[in-house]
Length: 414
Image (cartoon, rainbow, N blue to C red):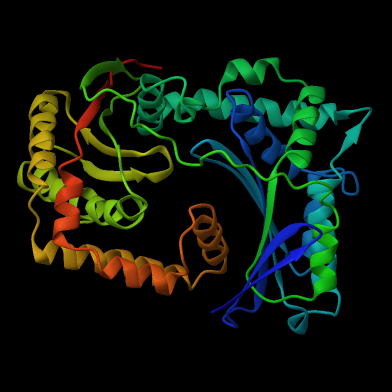
């Protein structure tokens, strides 16, 4: 793959040319400091901006336009990365050589209409559209209680340091106070006070890139750390219980990642996670689920931007104590791993990375992640990963201690 970086209208543009695909995708990213308020607002924004725009004032008209442009595709997301929130907008279209000439330009023009020319009147988003989206958003927040895993995750982050960004989540209290006017004001803040970047999955003409980047009036450079620092957190275990709204019981164990180097966080920690609980041959899976039948599912998750390692499992209430104690023992024993475990973990990550290059959406997403975490291209990353030693993993494991044990019990009926 050939990676080219250019600057258009003060917008960094990365072009990833592979010649694998008949389609081209583009994603524009708006990165802003996260606040308790915009954690809710930005996720509402992603929903309303893809629903309609000034030129296509209904979802039906927007859909018809996409069909006329050879079933072009648009999507959006809002994701927290450590101390920032990133709203991204993506288009996908067949290349012009497979359609009529000018189709890609039409797709990009519609893409820009959706982002930069929303359905607004008198400084407010369209009230009818706003009310529909708000109602659906409120319903999705209320339904989190019905998903034991998602609800447990919410309670876990609420139990961590509330001053840190990983505790900033979408909340109904901010949604209830939101108006079509206040949401539009937040939209202007996103457009005018974000660090903006454009990723393209293939080479396209400069004049088409200009269509997008010419809409950007300001591009702020944020200097604050992306990754949340937990070095100041106490080395103590907090045990909490909660009661959910269904029959499932979820156990979550959180470990702070403290005093880590760039190398440990980006190369050692991912391999540790695979060995601990990232595959069907992991220690957690083999010991918690297979040998002792204590969990329906069990896995470890690395939240690199939050400096957290989390273990999650679905269990029976009666197995809580045994599952917890066995998990703590497994964590303690991670200071000794085998050559075979390390070899398999490297193979697992490398295979996943290479497989991701067969999907044009994954290509641009992976490159953006590499940029914001200051990581090299896949080839160099894999080369560095292969150099990780057993000693690296075992030294890392000696730093890992459980800091929060949260058990969500099932039992409340709807």
